[in-house]
Image (cartoon, rainbow, N blue to C red):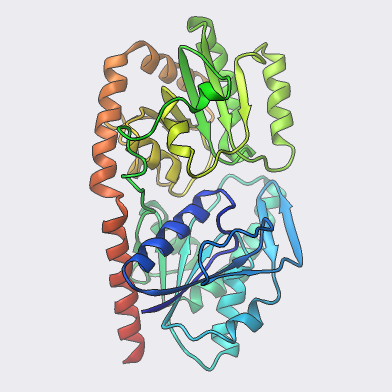
Length: 388
């Protein structure tokens, strides 16, 4: 098949959507498919992953607490030169999905199926942002869904959301979670000395890794760690990731106020090659988010046999089974988060059992060999259906 993947940003930019698309493209190419990748040149990079990766110049980057939205008007002229059998668009972020849907619906004589993966329906926005997103969802996002031949969701929890808010029938939706490279994220292979190499030491290391923005609930994690630090005197909290807006400064002010400056470490994102070693270096992985779709970081932590704590939002329960592969708590509950951390730090047997179960669950459900086959079947069925 000739497949066009369209995504606003791509590695070396670090993020769940970026990594998901990179893995999907890599596995499809490994199976002999011709896959073009259309993305923005954000951040500007000379790194070439493939001759078939097309990076468009960014006219304007609309950035804020919601993330980044690269605006690339040249996408229309580039799409006009391409002749794929099927197009697979990933959103959010915005602009690329809307532009691609507009092009193939109104401008292209090459009528082909368009698949849209909707990676996140954010329900935790503040009032002004919620109003803007509501308007977008009722206009441009609805248009994208109308143009799509099939909509892929990362978790089954959002099937009802799309039905309720966009009027989309369930038979137009496929649920396929992102995958994990379980060979790369293997506790038997990854070295656990990355944090020590960076001068970060402690008897117990609690790790968060992801975008540093308000939706991740990191203020609640820091407040919960204050309780943990009283019992575990040599414990450390490591917060690793790229900052959105000025949120990291706010978090550092909070650590100063709580007297935790020497116990909370803010770490810049590590490379994809070093990320398994980062996970291997921690004792507990925590994702205290206010909103998520299908957080890949949790599945990667499970694959590394790490006990995890996560909040009951989005598709988290499809990754973390409470008291079986991790602990699930309510979002914004500082007390519950502190209690869960102490429980795992005190009960090494429980932590080990959760980690072992998590690794097996990842192998059985999230390995890329299984999920690539599901995407191949989806593409084939939509192409055949479109030709009828």
